[in-house]
Length: 79
Image (cartoon, rainbow, N blue to C red; front, side, top):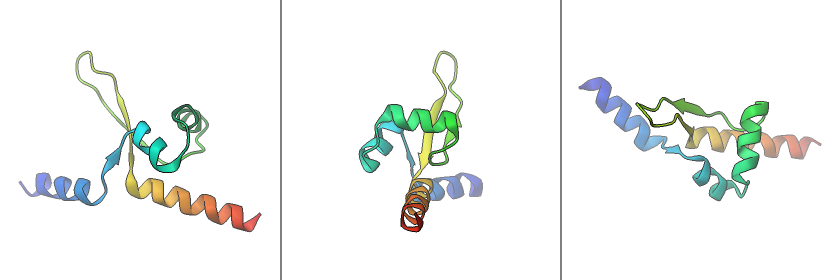
């Protein structure tokens, strides 16, 4: 039980967002986020295995998005 409650608490405090949700939050096109994933350029993401005929899902922790945005701003300010 404690592992389940820790996971539940973690997801509540750091929710997983879909590519579409990240696109809306950051105003970056979904295709650009996909390209960033391929290039290793964008925010950290996780792949969640699908079951049966379900495809694998890509999700982003909200904290990863926030960290990536802060890093991008620092890079822009330093330039």
